Image (tube, rainbow, N blue to C red; front, side, top):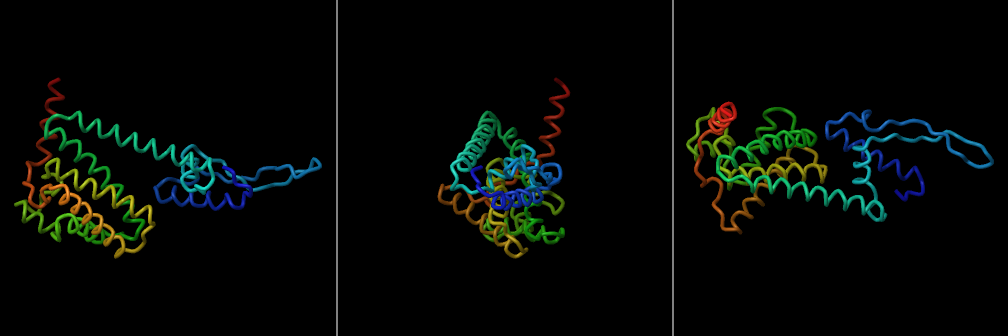
Length: 245
């Protein structure tokens, strides 16, 4: 990695450990410290601290190393390209869907997955209890829905208290909320935001920016989009079709 002194490289390993821990991975499964015998001249050796790394740990180290070093910059560029290719592949998968129902099911599943990841990132920032997380989610909704919270969205859409907002969104509204969730998660992690208030403000700001983008593109504001039938009905219908086949 072009580090001339192992002591300088240890700080990179430390950052990789933090990233591993914050991603809910067991550090000991990916980074194992041990003593390595190193030649110091005249045939003599001495113990030096070293570390055995999994492939995942190697990825984390490249992402946390000094980008002014050419080999690190090349590695980081590689991962950036691979991430973009995955995004494109995902977009191609979405674009192959032909009906609104198919798009809704796809986006709702993506939303469920990324909400789990968002909850983990929020917890790392200090959003711990269920009430904390409800407040955190409301800040995201307020940013995206022009100041309307979850209760207000229920009223605007004519939904019952027991009905989940996400289950009654069309594909356009789901896509906006998916972007809100993924970008908030990334921002919380990237900027290592700590504290409930800062996390809430971050969620609000990201939601607000997504709303601004929709407005600039001439799209319909999410609160004005009609409520759709429950996604549960689509899931049941899809399951019945599979059973018939």
